[in-house]
Length: 240
Image (cartoon, rainbow, N blue to C red; front, side, top):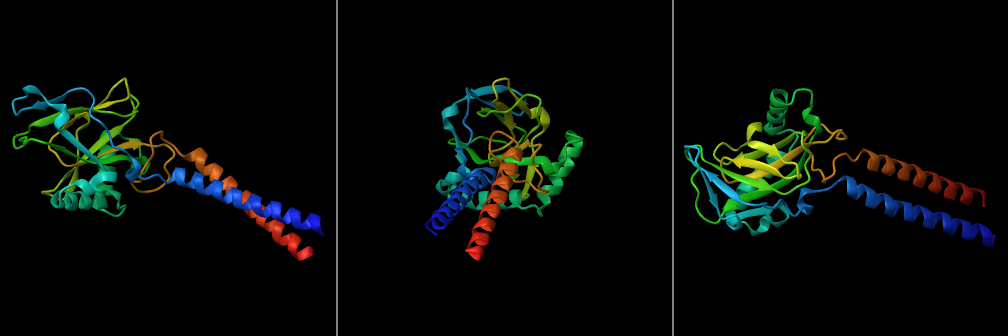
């Protein structure tokens, strides 16, 4: 009788341990952009005027506010940022259709369903910069991107209430994993990447490192083990 009780305790403890493990793994496959520190400016910052003349500006005055710290934005900036993020993350918003059209035009063969959000952030400059006549701000941002992989940068236009895509010619993936982007104005911005393991039909947050397929399989295996353990515990109680 004592042996049966000990066995039941062991089985119950095993089930709890597996549940906790599965919970940790599940947390790893449902990451949030809110957990990210945001990209950093690498090297110099360059302001390109309407005639195409480039001027190096103080990179220390570039202000990048990650999603986790948007509470530090002004009320006006926060309102625009929240509107932008809501549209970006809503699979039923117009952005999903725009993304599909962008992918068809620039990356045929890669479905929009496999594009995930890697970064969302607010970009600003501590001094006024004009973007009225096609000026651009060129920045190199930190990351671990791979040359040859599609990296999509989109920026929110508060005047139209839509996300615009930066032309692929203005987004370059560098050999060191950074990306160099020419921003047409300062605003909420997002970086999207291709994830072969993505199975959802919408834009979803993604951790650095790409596919979570293996982790999902481990979650499924853990759930099956938990179910088997619970089944054995219940069976032993009935036969006791």
